Length: 304
Image (cartoon, rainbow, N blue to C red; front, side):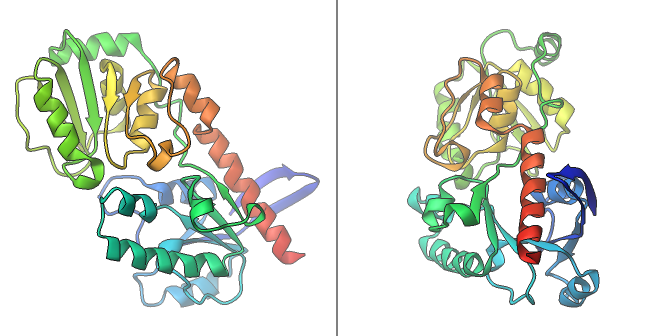
């Protein structure tokens, strides 16, 4: 439970349940579900455990936040906030995922939306694509902690010296998959072999080799910040979201796919990347406040 000191004139304590299969598929990697668990002091309930319904009844939450990916789970009447994390419409539009699989999942998410008391999307256009009225849904991105990702000239100079970088440097954070646009990233690397590249992956190391390529795998946020600061540009194609926002908070300019993911309705001007992140509402403090306000509102509406 979390205690919010004051919301209007009401003092409240909420019991919140999070329902998904797992928190992360990559050991040691934090995801949106870790963020919600910590931010709301919520109880994570895994649908992979056969007794999860019994666990839910015993916990008796005031509010449930469910991954809409699983559709309508037929949960006994409780205020339910459905979270839509994946933009299958865009994945299908750009041929990043099988169309049949995308359509099947869209239909499943639609059943979840229909039984939800409220819907939160991490990409603004999903409100329109699922025909969610303003009073029933809102956009809240995965916030980035601006106290972890920030510009540092000292880090830039030290990291570039350690890596032997003297000229222009471009960073890519992702993996060698179509969904992350690796085919286009690889082509960009091959076309710019006189530029230093930093490649960062979460799980499997990159297979590409080259004297101008520095590869990193499964690094912590402090090291990632140093690499952003050492770079002149963040380059990505395909569905790339949070890494680009992290880079911008470090003052690094970005060259990313427009009209997909976080950049569907907003494209950075690159005049002042860090300020642009704050203006666009991606700072962690803003997203925390939005989640807490919505949880309390839904709970109040349900009780009334």
